[in-house]
Length: 537
Image (cartoon, rainbow, N blue to C red):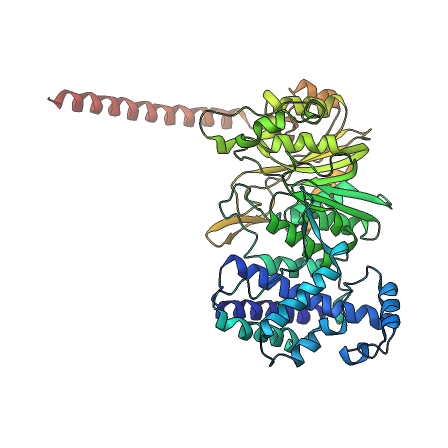
């Protein structure tokens, strides 16, 4: 099956599930996202289970085949399956639900099925909170707890099962499609559920172009195995998915934390779709700054697009009283302003937390507001001094404006390498990209060629006129720790040979223009004075 054709059919299924939610009165509600994502996930797990057991025993293709197995044969099958797919019983299959859809209390049967799957697979598929509570794979009462109208429970469950069963595709033909396919499908599915809703911690979806550039530069051509990657503000996992696929999903383990329960659930879905289920146990939902779950671990790679400006005054005293405060937040904690608390630069704490979390030879890529690059005092400067004095800064890429459609803040990416023995690379990509409308807002899109231009410039190891510079650490110190590429570009003066007659003509033109401007100014001054004389109280 052609990938594009499959993609269209998969997106049609997502739209069909949303249509079922609309019929149940859930259009645009928070419960809609639960039903859409969890129903789609159930379909994926159903197909993945059948696909994997089919590779173990080709004769096992359906519910009818599985129910013939005795207990010992089923246990052996599950042992051989391992963590390649969720462990399902014959009665958990979509085929079984479809054949029982006309029974009474079908919504309860549907909910109980998903609940059983969540319980049976809690060890592998549960997300944890910073307080060690498990967030299960599926809601305990997905339909019954989401649809207020009891009379619509069974109808909604039947419609969902029919849409999942009668969709014109199954995942089996596309499990090898790869990251680009599943990342696009995932983004389509959650596009209405991962936006800034005005909450304390806005959930911004990192553009794939930024995520790709970060992963390509950070990993480079390294031949890696058995490494870990961490994001302390992971959201739904765009940055982690990109770096995991650059390294190799079988060569790395993912760790994350995010304050949002919704984002943590979406990240789990993202890991399942992208063959990273082995890392689900390391997803933590909680406040990274006040309750860091992975604080005792050091990481080979860290990627992050942290929140920039947020009121964290309620957490201020707790952060400053943590046992390892001085080591973790070496540059300090922003003061609480008397006004505009929502503009507190929380990202400065995340930068420090990331540096603390890196292993001795670790690498990091962090999205920061571009204003950080030229800040000449305060916590910003202390962080930059540390990066330069310890020779940890690998480079910086300045992105075009509006690369994020959800914010007008200009952003850049810091690249940190604790083993950097080379010069520092500063790339100015601010003039790249094409501006397009995204709803009522404008955003800038980078073409694949422009993405590669930035990556090549960073890796080239030489200056490119007006685009990138290579600097010694001493050069940056001399410029008061400025990380802005533009401040290091050569100022070029173009000289044009002209004759003495051409020179005289130019001077005469300038004098005539200036005389006209002076006359216009004098006339305007006189008019103003005249009008002032006419004014009376």
